[in-house]
Image 1: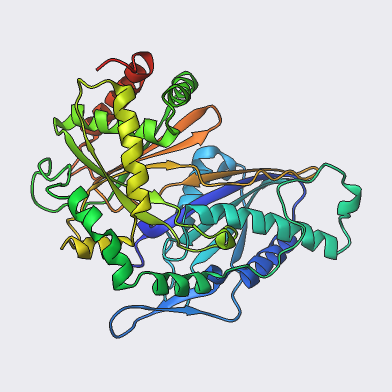
Image 2 (image 1 turned 90 degrees about the vertical axis):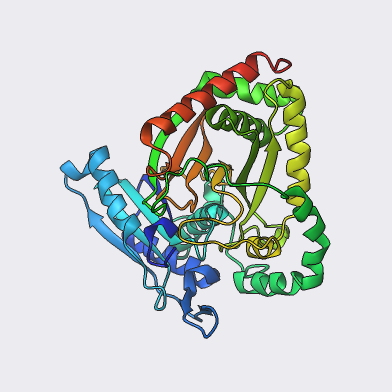
Length: 423
């Protein structure tokens, strides 16, 4: 996708209830910018590929808007935030993030964050939340408006300071480049060539021809609390992770939907092996293909354990996706993604729970179609429920067909929860 395409934006917003000010927020953002290279990164055209530029000092981008009563309504607020979410970035000048502070009323604000996927991943949101909240408290301390020593147990989820990062985004990039030598990639080549031999994209046969680059559409639904509870209990009973229970069920649903029994989907991985980068903002995430051979007559309890074993093997052999595609002789194109066309993700990035006296915060994300595939399914734990975001190209997956898949997925989940030992 071109850099200006808003499908490359990661979008979220914080609902803030309590006494906060624009001036203190702006000063807090400045502290985060000083700490995090990703907020000072932009890209210049290079001879062979773009060049990443990290500036010594960065720009604080925090815009303020006071909403009218009509604009505070949920639908109007969503529309206002959406306008900011799709506004393109200047890729060369930077910065590749921005914040919009929207005042809904006295002590009631929404802080909308948009950051480009070239310098951020889902984990980055948690790092940003913790840094921003810590910076805000430090700002209040430095101005004499807050004494943490007198707050007792009323403050949690933040650090006591914002020291220099143990490993900056730039340092990590240098380590990764040094790590993935041809010899290191060759160690995993045999696994991937064998594992993906003869695989195909799920929706190749479904496409009716013509342009497959149509704009991704988004449909949001949920798995209700009672079903979510059963799924979690099933994971416990089978000794598998929640991700693998949901993935195996998704593969079964895709089989029923398409009739295909050889299913390959891609899933994102955090790719933050070193503890030194847990607090670092940046694009670290990788993508790993997962292949499943579905036998609808096989007991689900057996199948999900096989899926878990295969998932662990795939994660252990993960290499940079561009290198994997090259290894397999694949290439991406505007109408055809390399290796797979269907994405599955369980979004469970660590988002700190911040508690401050008189201030309540809540972080929510909004998808703008970051998925570059014909079909994507993203699940996010939302309290006792799961939010389900479907991303799809209607010229490949029509609306009614997508809703059919959603119903099949729910049906499969109910069935495997009720009868995990049955086919």
